[in-house]
Length: 393
Image (cartoon, rainbow, N blue to C red; front, side):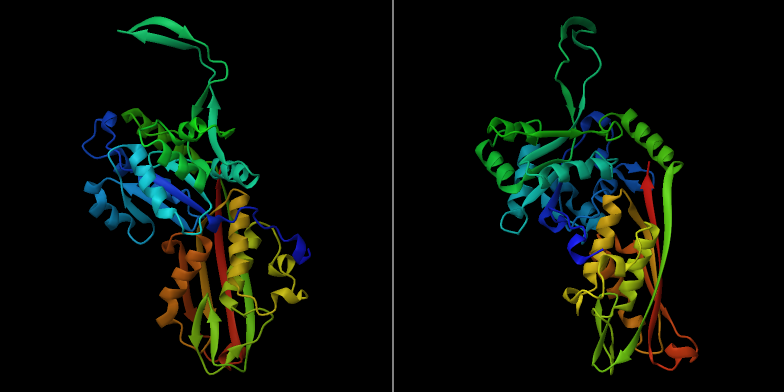
């Protein structure tokens, strides 16, 4: 594959922000705890909603001022927190204002109480925006008969033709949705209505029945059943990678995205980041998509001296485009020197940031070869890596 055919997203994810609304009180749940903080499996509803967008660099969460301390404790450092307003529209507008002038071109607005949104649904919205739509949202066509009722009896009927059940995330060009909110400060049921009032077309993409909004007590039970079902119907892939680079002249090495001072450098076509190369190949291997050389040929001069994060980010994006999320990654560096321990935490954080996952899904550790072989003779550094990818059916 030539470098010109390397797939590149038409709408880079670092240009897309995710705005998750979680400032409501959820009184219909009948719980003293707001529904977004209720437990769904081993995580809160809100934590699961956020995790669904792990591949995006910028995530903004609007929360009730009374929840700010709790939110910082659970999510601090992983997302941008914004105090919500009196209405949903106030909260969304506050989040949008934070994004203006940040280089973000598009935004996905998602209900924090929709914890089971799938990669396919998110991907369909992003694809519509990449194709030029200024607004896009998932919807499910209404198939049931519709009644009007009062006092427990049917009082009339409604035509279901052309009706859809709205879901999130709803995606927009940032200037479009920001202008719509500024033009209509009054509350609106959702953001699609606001841009539609401005005369803009909103593209409908396929929704998902599992993308339910936690509203009533029974919804939480149903979400739990869906999670358990997904747990028994998953495609789990395991890949491994191995790489080695020799020492050469220099005063530092790049390992797992961190520059480490050393009395030698590592020799390679790119920046010779042996740890990142092994991890990248582990992801490609799990996907049955070859190795770095297939996607970024060393014969192509444009990759001379390239930062290896380009390769790792591409592998992570490819996994997401194929519907997979990273379960965990484990990288082992093999060398006598430099010492890895003091830098392992920074390496873990850097790899996680590049792949768009939580740091606790990435492990970086080191070992020596007990003075045996080329690493024992300090002729170079080797690395092995394992990556687990999961696709929920």
